[in-house]
Amino acid sequence: MVWKEKMKKEENCFQGNNSTFSLALLRWFKENGRSLPWRETIDPYAIWLSEVILQQTRIQQGWVYWERFLERFPKVEDLASASEDEVLRLWQGLGYYSRARNLHKAAKQVVEHGSFPNTMEELKQLKGVGDYTAAAIGSISFNLPVAVVDGNVYRVLARYFGISTPINAPEGKKEFAQLAQSLLPQSEPSAYNQAIMDFGAIQCTPASPRCLICPLAETCEALRSGKVDELPVKLKNLKIKTRHLEYVYIRCQGQTAIHRRSAGDIWQGLWEPLLFEDQPIPTFDAPLQLLKKDVKHILTHQRLLADFYLLDTEKRPVLPEEYIWVDEAALDQYALPRLIELLLEALPH
Image 1 (cartoon, helix red, strand yellow):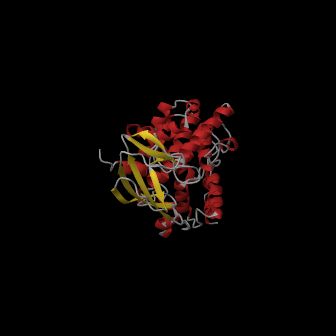
Image 2 (cartoon, helix red, strand yellow; image 1 turned 90 degrees about the horizontal axis):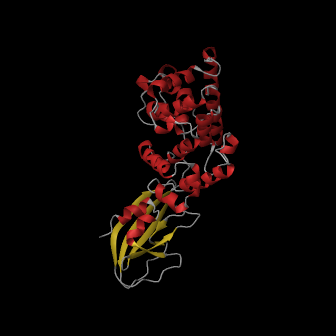
Image 3 (tube, one colour; image 1 turned 120 degrees about the vertical axis):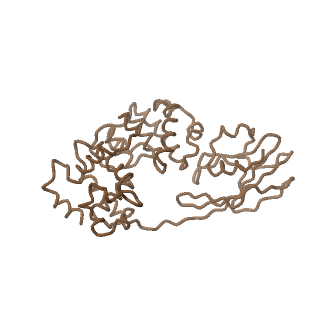
């Protein structure tokens, strides 16, 4: 492997388990690391919250939600005792709602455990906590010498060591995990893990990396070989499914009908208006008003195209039994998918 050969060349620069690469990152971090509120604590609950919220979420947006969750649920016991509906409502707007459901279930696990787990094995038993999140919590809260591997880490290591193994292939995941762990300074796992993540987010960015002022420029393999834009390599094997959704918002004497989405599909546990998918819309006793057509909403594996209709009627139509009638003014008490929020904005007052 190329990176093993490169590591051998740095052997004379090793100090314990600190290579020139690791030392350069730590020096860079001391001067350039991001000032974030969850960096001011080693409380595993606060750090775990930040890690879960920031998955698939920009820092600035996640920051607001992190503060909101800590204000509403100051301790993990508070989160565990909340209802799922309350957690989902607080999460509303972040998307990927399975994170919120897992967060709630994991909080209950922590309470049952009696304290926050402090080993990698126990941390990974928490619902929704994988290798990366466990390593982040473990290294920052408990000083466990375990390297994190996320998108930033893949990119930094692939470029610096010139690794072309696909990061989403089994051999790639194994290779990068091995390399990341070999570079981790045993005495400073928290600082190093945060350093390499910040380095990827600020310095070695996906597009337009700041190579001209990079402290690793002289020894970066991708920069030397002109492959910065080619690394890391990722196999393109994702198939996007397109779904056509037709929603009918029923307005009947100040009330509307909604139902909770079931398990096994997108938006599990969230609420939505009357839905027709892969079936024609029936005839109602009042005309339908088309409010929006082909509204596009992109999920990880799916592309949604939604039409939105208004049925303004004085008589309740017969609906499947899973639908409930609620006051229109009380809709904000129900957790809704972001797509539905966008559609509701088109409703005439």
